[in-house]
Length: 408
Length: 181
Image 1 (cartoon, helix red, strand yellow):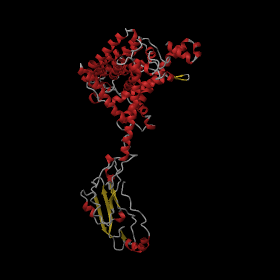
Image 2 (tube, chains in turn red, blue; image 1 turned 135 degrees about the horizontal axis):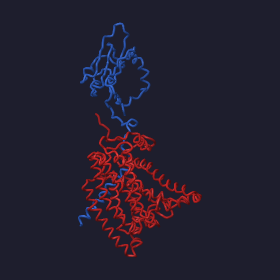
Image 3 (cartoon, rainbow over the protein chains, first blue to last red; image 1 turned 120 degrees about the vertical axis):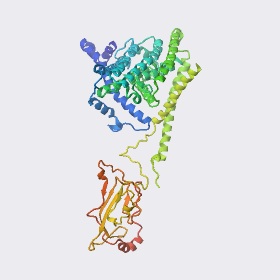
Image 4 (cartoon, chains in turn red, yellow; image 1 turned 30 degrees about the vertical axis):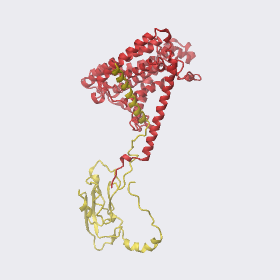
């Protein structure tokens, strides 16, 4: 509230002289409007990106009929879903059936409240930011179980129960990993965690405390994949086993709401991961933090979050769905021990004053690691482009060779 | 303990290996062919819809006899004696009036056997393959026409007259390209 008020006054100095009811209304409306825009427009982009990326990864073209290069495809899909009849099967529990997608959406969208898009650009700088994100996000679990139960369908119930088991299991390692940056910074506020990583690429938490942070990040990412029900951990809605799981009986707008919630959860998780390990709204170099007087924090957070959304899509089209027992194995036997060890180690570390600002080898490991990662990404990119160019040449040399029938 | 670390590392590493493959394919050219706007080139001598040039048919019925599935139905009768003489393009006189020449493409098995015995090469396979209809009877193609423009001058005599002139000039038209290439 205070941060938003300051931001408003910074934007419009005249606002300081406005009546308080108007200012309160504006302060309440601005973040709500921003969140609503995200809610409405975000999934349009995510779904389009998902379809295009999956198509490219499978050597297809993807949607390209509605609008230029298919840009309006998801818009058309949304309109279709909105105008479709919402069917309530005869034996569903109507109240819960309607409430479930709403609850899932609440869990997906409320975390936007604390995501910092810039030093001032944050709806509310709660001092319990990380805790708030986790607490609100777990509301969607209740929604999923509710949807499974209310559908009065055994596959839906399976989906709901699987969602509950999966999310509850993976929340434990995810929460413990959340503690790692939180303990080092000494604050739950996402704003403080971001500020603690200021000073350029090499100060991001991923590149500091060498063996701890990269491992913590990978663990957190895997746990987050499971928490957002993304492949390869999408067993609650496994199409081929459970006919869609908890959203089998949903149609029209309610189905669209589940979709919106899933993609928004992805974005929220990616944003939180970038805040915790990738410096949030901080630019790779302090000089890039703003152009003139235009702050670019929102741009950097957007880019980082999008990168992780992309990685999640990438993983989805790479890995097959895991079995339930494998899922539990990963959660309890792999991620949980790693998380426990990390928490204990970091808990010991923060007692040693010398390590409060990083390991003594941060300078010798952090920098090479940073440069190494950037160079590696560049190398992979160049190699992939070379490979694809060679493949294109092969295709050009023998056009349609596979399909050409040979007739005497 | 060692086994556990090995398993974790292997799981992580093999995921990266898989991701490398999808990453490569992210940049490759799509193999999709957008059918109605783009089409695969047909191989030479593809056998698609049958066509019959009514003006050249002498009504001999050899194609009807060759057809293994009886998809051609032909009815030919003797031309009246006082009718003007007509010829096929290869110079054979047409003695019979072809009243009916129907090909039922829904029966045709695209074996191409009917085209070999035809003395005037008037029946042949075209590279036309998009003739799906919602009504099966539309696959019955009727080739007999009332107002066919027959050749009413003996092509052999005409060729003989034109031969000295053509011997000096190079052939006017190059041979037609094979269908569908």
